[in-house]
Length: 214
Image 1 (cartoon, rainbow, N blue to C red):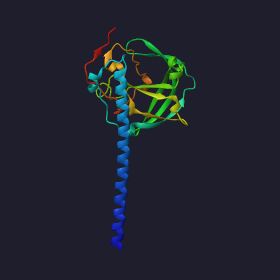
Image 2: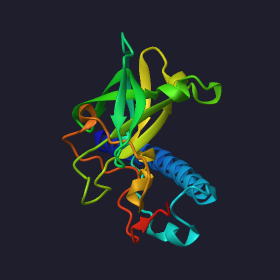
Image 3: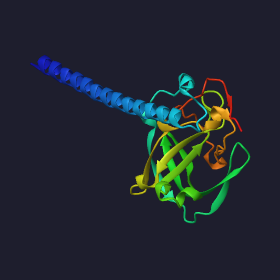
C-alpha cells in the first residue's frame, strides 16, 4: 500500500510539472507571436515612409534578437520634480530640444539599471504627440551585436500606473543613422549608457550603409 501511495504521489508531481511547463511554453509562444506581429508592423511602416532610408529590398538585412519575455520589465517610475529643458545632441551635429520627464529603475536579469525618460519639447505641445516619451540608450552589445550608436524605445506617459511602467526591450529599434548618413538621430545621453548587455530588440543591420541625398 505504501509503495502504491508513493507511485501515485510521484506521478502527481510529474504531471503537475509537465502541465506547468506546457503552460509556460504556451505563454512563451504567445509572447513570441506578439513580438513577431509588432516587428512585422514596424517593418511595413518603415518601408511605407518615404523619408526612410531603406526600401523593401533592404528589409532582409534588418535583424532582431530572439524575442525574450524576460526583457519585458516592470520598472519603477519617478516623475522629474523640475522638467528643465536641455539640448540633446544628434549624430549630424545639430541639437534637439528635450526635457527629462522622469526616472526609471528596472530589474534586468538579476541586475538593476537606471534610465532617464525624455520628452521632446516641441512634440509635447502637439496634442497628437503629447503622450509620447522617448527612451534612447546604449549598452554593451553596441558595435558588435547591435548598432554602435545606441537604440531607442517609444513609450506613452499614459502607460504609467501607480508609479510603475513596463519597458519592453524587445521593442527597441535602431535610429535611421544605423542604415544611412544624413539623418538627425539623437545621441543617447550619458545617463542612459548601460554597463550591461541587452540582447533584445533590433540587432545590427547587415546591409550596405547608404548616403541620404541632400
